[in-house]
Length: 145
Image 1 (cartoon, rainbow, N blue to C red):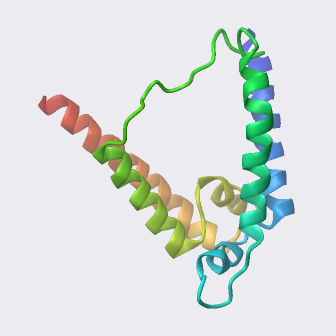
Image 2: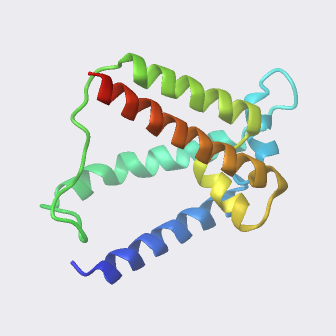
């Protein structure tokens, strides 16, 4: 596979994902926080977006996996992990806390950064700092073993 073809596919996929986020209103942190505010001004829009995503995945996932390989890769890269461990729980908790406090997760935050959203301008650097901190901590832990 040519690198330019893979890069173009990644660019188109990312743009399509960003467009879907924007059209569904999922780039607005207030909409996400409204979904999480079940006892206040509840906004069910995220539930419908998630339902559409899960429904689409359920319909198409097995069809896609019938192929011998992805179009632009030699093989499918599906995790073989089948258990819930401490790092998964801690990571999920940190993700949820950040999502609940800011109303952003990585995809919408990058879309927000692209349109210079004030929230994204502080969230994305904080997210990148957290990623760097994780890399440093896991590298240190791997070196200590």
